[in-house]
Length: 325
Image 1 (cartoon, rainbow, N blue to C red):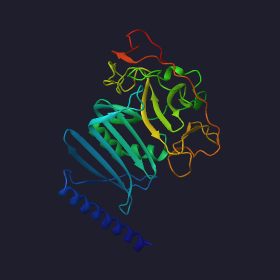
Image 2: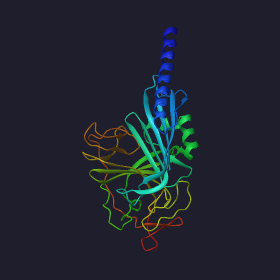
Image 3: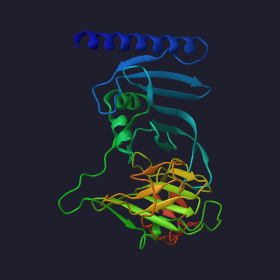
Image 4: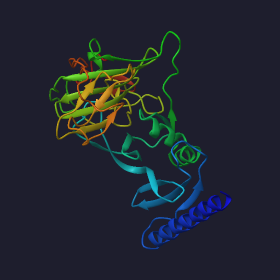
C-alpha cells in the first residue's frame, strides 16, 4: 500500500513537471506569462492544482485558470477578460454592445456558465445554478485570483427559512420584467414560455424562450443600477455602465438551438427552473435534468415600456414615466 501511494505521488509530481514544461514552451512562443502552479484544497471535484496564466492583447488583460487533477489532466477552466467586451442588454438579447468591462466564463466537464459586466468595477456575481460550477468558483485559489484581478466575488442564493425557501413559478403577473421594445424601438415578441426562480421572497432569475429556438437566462435586480449597486445612465441606444437595465434585468446567457429549447417543471420536486438548450438528447446543456416529457411553463406578455435610464431612474423613450416590475 505504501509503495502504491508513493508511486502515485511521484507520478503526480512528474505530471506536474510536464505541465510546467508545456506551459514554459507556450510562454516562450507567446505573450502569455509562464503559468504558476497553485495547490488547491481537498475538494469533491478532484481538482488538486490550478495553472494560473496571465496575458495581454492590446488593451485587454486575460486571466486563465486551468483546473488540474492529480495526473495534470485539465478538468475545467476559468477565463476572465478585462477590457473590450461584448455585452447584451435587457432590451437587446439578440444584439450586443461593445463596452469596457469584464467577461467571465467558467467551464467544468460539460457544464458552463458566463457573465459580462459593462464596467470594470468590483461586484458580486450570482452563483451558477450548477453545483459543480458553484464549488469550482468558490475554491479559495479561484476566488482569490478573480478578486485580485477584477474585484469579482460570488454571492450565494439567499438562505431558505422555514417560511420562505427556494421556489419556481411561471411568469404570469410579472410582465413588467420583459421589455416591449428594444433600444431601436422595434417591438419584441412575447415570451412563449417562462420560469421565475425565487430565493426566499426575492426574484432571483428568469429563464424564458423568445421563440422555439431561443432561450435566455437573466438575473433580476434594481432597474438602472451598476453591478456595484449605484445609479447608472443608459440613453440614446447605449446601455452605458448599467448592469441591470431599465426593466430591471441583466442578460447572463442566451442560447440558440438546432432542435428547439425547453423551460419546464423539473421532476422529483426540485424547486428550481428546469431548462434544456436542445430538445434532442445529447446535443445541448440542461439543468437540473434533461427535458423529456416534463410539463413546460406557459408564456407571458411584455409589459415594461422603459427604454432609458436617467441617473438610476427608468424612463420611457420620450423621457417620461414608465412601468417596470
